[in-house]
Image (cartoon, rainbow, N blue to C red):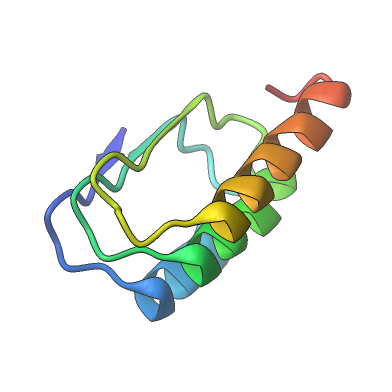
Length: 86
């Protein structure tokens, strides 16, 4: 588990984090109470296929994630589930 809660992480930082997490063995990521919005959520969703061990992603309190970000997270998780990844 990696916890980066309450670290003022915004879309730019989460994009860099998502890129760095590709091919990682991290199973759980805590990103609660940050400043992540739609673009950050989309970057995380795009990284899902490269993170086969990921079992939990905590995004509570990121009130800037709107419909577009939620849709991207849903689609990313759905595609991975179809492949048996999640």
